[in-house]
Length: 330
Image (cartoon, rainbow, N blue to C red):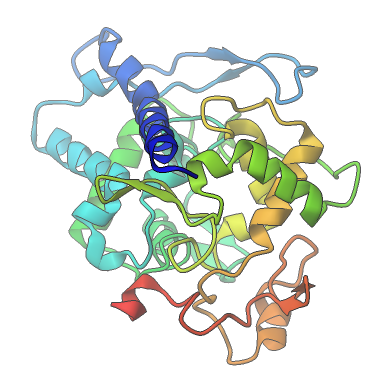
């Protein structure tokens, strides 16, 4: 790619990210606040992922302008800062090139992108992933260990308190213990065809490479990642939720390409998710020392490619100097 064209692509990419990252927040800021501090959930009409489902109401978090101007509001704003600029404000807990907002879009507001308002009211809860009842603080710690490939902040740390406060504030008016529409990722059901690496590679080249780079390692502007890496040392590790193809397919279908969510067919979402997850990434922190044993203990399901051979390479076995964590490389 010639230099002027690359610069143009970077400019378009940077603009696209800025629009996506701030669209929900900007709309929330501009919306008039009703009342001083409290807000009421608003039903927003959203179409089903395939266009054939009934329109369902989705919880709407309060506008940013409603954050109170007091000590609690200051903590909420700190949580928002950490959430959207994690490497800057909580970098000593981050081991890759991601922020919380890399996956939880629109500052944790967007439905079908694991919004914070959908998570807060569901904890404490039993999680099969670690075999015990988790608090919300522990769920946040897991995000740092797996999705951020870093280390867990103490449960009473400033980062966890701030992020918990932000999630609690976003969820004002939402019922407790009720799975809200749009609270997680889309469930696409079984794919019509077995997900395919080559078909996924073609989708990636057509719809994803402009932003995430032809090598999937993300792109920077002014030295800062504006589009996150999808594999390699700067990406989420083998313990993160998005390494499971079904989870990645649901996220991609609803949200990607950026600003054009819902435009891929279900099969294209499955195929490109498979392609993404069929690349090496940092090791699962729970690694037992043996890939097969780690798969049996933690990845024994049909949608995890950990320990599976793809294109002659057993995923999870790594490549020295290529899939180590950022923290280990520093």
